Image 1: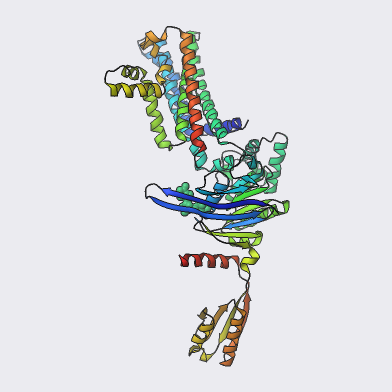
Image 2 (image 1 turned 30 degrees about the vertical axis):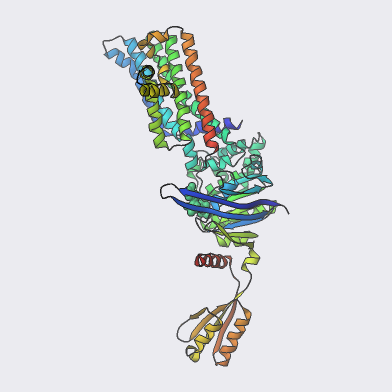
Length: 314
Length: 255
Ligand SMILES: Nc1ncnc2c1ncn2[C@@H]1O[C@H](COP(=O)(O)OP(=O)(O)O)[C@@H](O)[C@H]1O
Ligand SMILES: [Mg+2]
């Protein structure tokens, strides 16, 4: 498969004129996004996600580095025929109706009538905006409806590649689930999606690969499977003797030990040999093993761990 | 054409702004006061109606133009609609051209609306529409078009507040054509230098005021056709230069 997006050493520095401070919003980022995948671009607020997307679309200009989008240099006008962008928190022209707004965007693609009306209708149906709302002004739309219109405008040119910047942020649970499913369904139409998000549960559900970016730097990238691989096991043990000397011995094997009341301990480890060692030790000391529960790691755990580790090493 | 789609959208948005309507309504109101004033003053009521009407169109047009054109581009950035537009196959020059055309059209519609009311008043009173009044309205439009170009040009690199004072200030200075012109012949080289720069670099808004020809008969009257044509050409050429500069600036601008 070919690369839909190929980023090489992309860097963006902002200079604060007043404070003479330099912010490195994106720091030497290199990344490949394959055609046909939903790629999760993860990071906290201020990590540099939006800045990266805006550079890729030619809205702002990189300090260093470059990228190709569908084989063309970023910002190329021709490639815009085949891509789409949903910015975060757009207000749109809110005195227009949903229909008129999409019609306007379709005209920017030089799509003639009657094809234009057909496209508008298809996009509105695809995002499941209630038909009663089509001819109403956007000002009266709920946040979820606005976000639907946002995705609809991104679909108007039947793009190969979509940049969606936090499309499900700030929505109620129902709208959230529906929009997430709409994004997920794009994959089956063969589209590539570059999805910026910090909604890790969504990403885990619909993305095939992700990148974690923090303070402008790429920390990890890989398939979800790769990232969450490695089970953690939680062992709960009980015994009167545990506190005398036992605690220190256990801690020597597994650093993560939590006291759960007087005589109960909870230990977690992702190393099966250590788990076995703990069990042996507890049995030898006449302790009781209450439970051994294997845990699948979640993307959230991996994300938090990765970001914390980075912060501690600085 | 993409620029036309942008222009059309720009006009729609401009007409949804309440502040534009306020100035338009004030303008129409002042114009319709003309006959009342003419009635009340002992002076020649025809002159009162004519000069009050033209002044009202100029004043309301001035505010309509500035408050509208100040926001055409910044509003798109603030509401982030510009991201969706520029990420479609729209070149930045098409966007700026669309804004200029949309701004001009908005100004035209406003001046034309006030002009129609004004000429109707005159017809009502004089039973005819004198050609010079029509020309007066037309020149005001070209003057405002030039101002619109200036304001949109500034909006590509200044904030709306700065732009308001900048455009307003330059309009005022540009109206003092006789003063700046007299500076160009002063003996003090500094005064002469600055005067010449201001006189030739800043747009000469004063040239468009048909009333000026009463104050400065020596210019006007050589040939009225040439006077009109030169002013219109001046507005078009100066605006085109501003458009090109705006495009060059906007092309490098981060949004
Ligand atoms: N125009 C700007 N000027 C100065 N700093 C900026 C500008 N835009 C973004 N930044 C800074 O760059 C960093 C990354 O921002 P952004 O890309 O918006 O993050 P994200 O989208 O991941 O939340 C932040 O620290 C932000 O403050
Ligand atoms: Mg962001």
